[in-house]
Length: 251
Image (cartoon, rainbow, N blue to C red; front, top):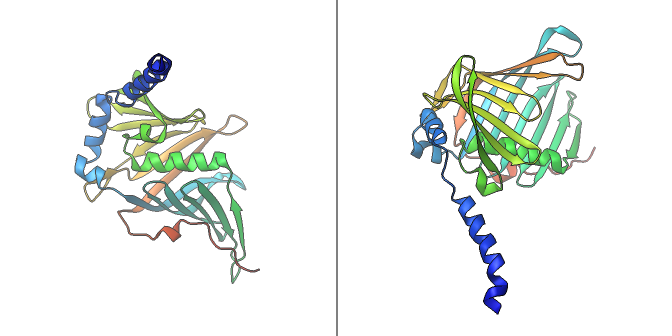
């Protein structure tokens, strides 16, 4: 009698196990091989990008504003991004399931405002971190799913579209060239479209020299953000406190 009562749970567990060992899409292995050999990709524990963002100037849409960017992604779930904004600094950190933002003005000494970020921002930061470190493999370990969405032609190139679904509201749609596995285009569920340009090779891993992100504002006008990389570093040793919530200082 006990065995009969347990059978539904056994079936559920069996189906779950089958899903977890589903065969990987062949295009994933090809995409990884395009970036680097397998041992090199598995050895990446952190990546640091230093570069410049060129964004539309809020005061004059015909002009560009340049912002210095320094961002580190570290396994398994840490991120720290520094942006030079309006003569000050904006720092955003992720430490597991804690996330925060520190705004500093250009005064001497700088005045600071610390904000603890809510759950939706934490989930977004976690997704961004995993997208930059997993190299298209292993999302299932974090509760996500990977779906083949068929062949599409992008810029005249036959591509396979693969959805990397982190949560019900966060997804990255990658378009890989069928012939080589090269990433041609990324769409994000919020409407952003990212194209990569050029190449920088760091310790055997291919990275783009720049990215161009397009999106539409509330009025439907297309906005373009260009990120140009000045330096990329792998496996930099950083202490855990580098990502931790800062200790508030007295005003």
